[in-house]
Image (cartoon, rainbow, N blue to C red; front, side, top):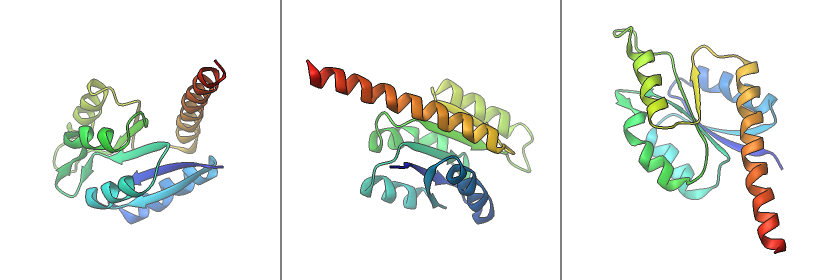
Length: 140
């Protein structure tokens, strides 16, 4: 069964491009354009990876990481950003804030299929490790 990725991206064009990269890597992508849609998806289905854009409309997703982590405990988070037009330091500042918040993956835009493939490989290994631990525990 394919892994599920939730992609929060307010640009529909970018969401389509990003979701196609994840689909090419073997993931089923669900794209949403707002925090409320993302939280609704997280309350109704399970995901293996969250890919969150930092700047959604006038909101900073990094301010709400605790909410995402509460709704999807143990699910790796990838943060992506290109920054903001009126603030050339916003991208670097956001990625540093995400790193300090112990986000698993940082994806500065533009990123490429090789970046997505690497993230997916790491996520697959992460979940396989958890499945192996559960299997050993169940066998004991």
